[in-house]
Length: 228
Image 1 (cartoon, rainbow, N blue to C red):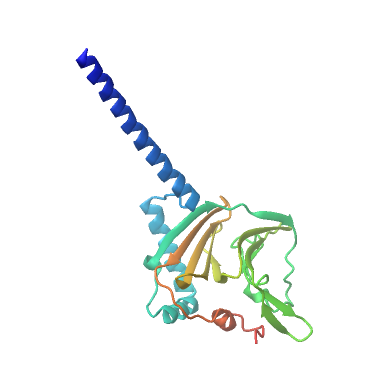
Image 2: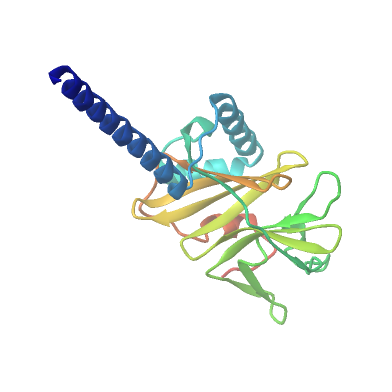
C-alpha cells in the first residue's frame, strides 16, 4: 500500500513539473509573438546584414552622415534584428501622382523590371507649387505605385521617425534607411521589405545619439526642394 501511495505521489509530482514546464514554454512563445520577433536562422540573418552592407556601400552619403552623428563608422554588423512581421499592406487604385515636372520625381525608386516605383518622400515632403517651398509632414510612408495603377502602402511611421533613403536590392526586396526617436535617443534604422511575400524585417543600430536635427539628411538629399 505504501509503495502504491508513493508511486501516486511521484506521478502527481512529475505531472505538475511537466505542466509547469509546458506553461513556461507557451508563455515564452506567446511573449515572442507579442513582441513581433519571429526567429530566423543564422544564414538568413547573415544574408540580411550583407544586404544592409550593400545598401550602405551604395548610399554612402547616408552611411557617412550617421557615422558622424553616432561618432563611429557603421556597417551591417552593427545592426540588430528587432522585428520580423508580415505586412498588412493597404492597397488602393491610385496612379503615381509624382509626374516628371514634380521636384520629387528624380527621388523615386524605379522597380528593376519596370513595375512602377517606390516613393518614400512625397508623403513626408509637402510642396507648395506657388513658391517652390516645402515643409515636412509629421508622418511618413513607403508606397509602391505599381504599373497596374494600384498603390500599396508598405510602411507607415508617425512623428517619432523618418524614412531617409532607400534602394531596390532585387526585384522582390526593397531596403529603407532612416531613424527612430525613442527613449534612448535618435537611432538609425533599416527596414527590409519583400514585396512578393509581404514580409518585413526591422533592424536598429546598436548606437544612438541624443542630439539630431530631423531634417538634416533630407535637406542634403533632396536638393531640388527648398525645405527652409
